[in-house]
Image 1 (cartoon, helix red, strand yellow):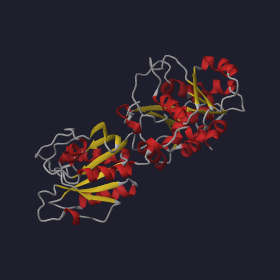
Image 2 (tube, one colour):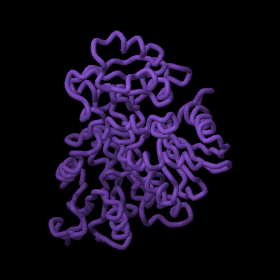
Image 3 (cartoon, rainbow, N blue to C red):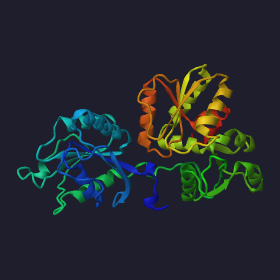
Image 4 (cartoon, rainbow, N blue to C red):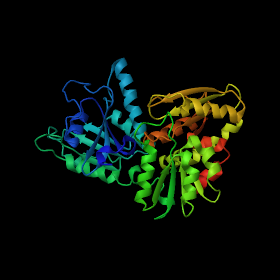
Length: 401
């Protein structure tokens, strides 16, 4: 997979924020070397956030997000500002753009306070330094952030653009893309068996993203990846000279696979690995305990991070609700969301069961977890919930401990 093929969820998300006409879009275009954002002297040219996946040297694969002005006015302006602030929930690095002629004001200060509260690395950029002739760019510092730089986005001089890109690159190092999914719990030449069921819900001619990612991580670790359908798992294990070091399965066949794989062999699922990789494994394990307390008419939200055409045997809307009814002996109410649709107010629910989040970055998944727990609602994911209901949760998380 080339850098240009890197999934959005694995790219560092860089959000550009500031007042209208501070030059956010011009700065985005200067950094990317493309006319990604529309630039105009007319106030409020950027309305909804604009997302663009690209590769920028020396940064690598990133998602650039250009947002509406923090001082946008009117009823529509208020809605645009709300969308701009929501972008922070998925932002790994924030670039706060200040018009050098006007200086920093309450809009930027309020945003910086919010960014600090959310522990997002950020850079304060003083833009249009070329026309702020009475101000020395090197003197324009607020002392409020770990990274600050004055930038002249003049197409003639390009002052500070390379410096800004290098600073972002320094922050970029060590982000999620460098974290192992499974490589840290296996050894070179270990045999890792990946169980991939192929049914009506499986995409044609390809594997889903978590399966691709785990295969690559196994190869990077110098281990041996054996990919097999659940229907051939028993025969595959019998053909191996030695037991595999680890079996990783799709969650929907967790129970069947657990009966086939010897107790002496470590077993987990793609979804559980995603929970650890995205940083919410502990909360998800705790949340699964709530399944033992479900009563009739309790509301459960089942949420997926991507949108896809649902098949008749869809795991989220069909298999998981059926398994919950069977396990609990109760008849709870189910709601479903997908993609970017995630409620801000979850207080009506007793439990949220999320997918593995392979199409969402770590910050987005942590935001969803915090929003859920902050409302006093339990939070878990598909794989952990299914392991719990199959009586194999302790076994399935043991390889990660």
